[in-house]
Image (tube, one colour):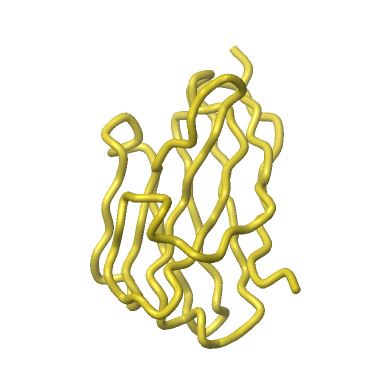
Length: 125
């Protein structure tokens, strides 16, 4: 049973923008902290952004601060990642994840129990 589904990835020129979406299948996910992670070929999975259950607290990896924004719409049980000023080094498979039963943000992938299938982001210069 797939419970998190990412969308919005694609091919974009450096300096451009994309908005990723992560739709959850159950309303229970509206109470869970969420995160975005990414993994590029040959590299380890990297934390990108996290948001607490009501959207009041967020945190970001340093390299994306000021460029990326995580948000959520709990009525739609959907989390977003707005990515602006994209750079080639942002290219990766992006995954959304949920902390089951946890409200607070976390930068640690091991704290997340549910993961989406990933969406590919390709940035060319």
